[in-house]
Image (tube, helix red, strand yellow):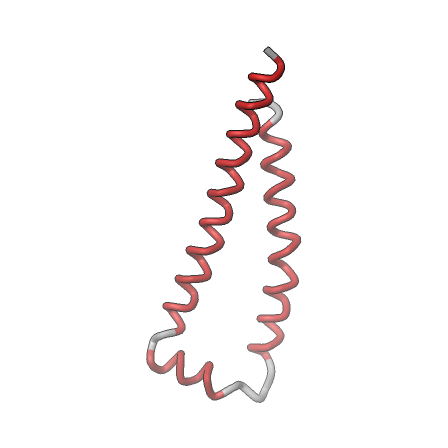
Length: 82
């Protein structure tokens, strides 16, 4: 279990490293004075929440996959040591 914590931290750091530039670009795009019509239409119809929900589910799935992969690798490492 001690070995899995640094791996989990590394996975989360990698995820954040990949996610932060995307969020920065998204923040700059929303701050632009010329807002695209599609964004306004999605916001008015309430579909923007569907987009946010899908992104959240995908990111949660990736995080769950990384954690389960780390646990499996930890078990395999213990088996190899024994």
